[in-house]
Length: 188
Image (cartoon, rainbow, N blue to C red; front, side, top):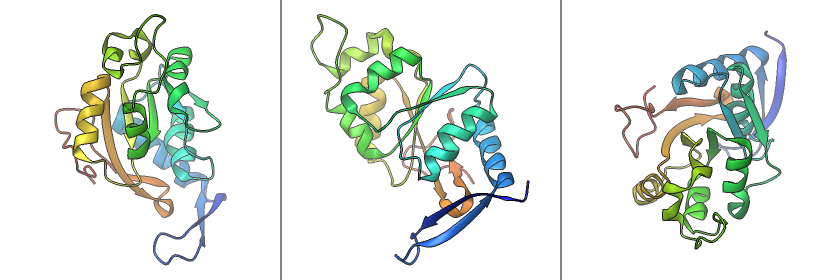
């Protein structure tokens, strides 16, 4: 439990990369916290589109999925044009993202059900997105307009959070309920 599990490099405070050692206990504790905070369970399937050298992909969408008894789908990279097909194919319930990814999905470049125009607003009636409960977003604040447009367009909550590599990724999340305050890093 106290043995080092992951050694990664971070440069958030000085600009010069420095080693960050995280134990098995760190990873399990953060996965447990995220599972409880987001009410994940065995029926959840998380999509990992962030690079696997980043703690977001390691903890938020991979370790958390394993901890809660769910599953994870690892995409080689984020692709706005393939995103909704992956959500439909694997019945994704949540994914980790950054604000730029949400903006790219809003650009409407994803394929639609046969015969429909490429209009993201029609996603609300598109059964391919119905499994998706929310997008977990971090790394930088989500502009209020982007958050509102994403939620209104796709009918999917954006749950903002904050964390550091040194804290095994997530330290805070907005709660996915009526106490959520868009634009906030969430509750400690």
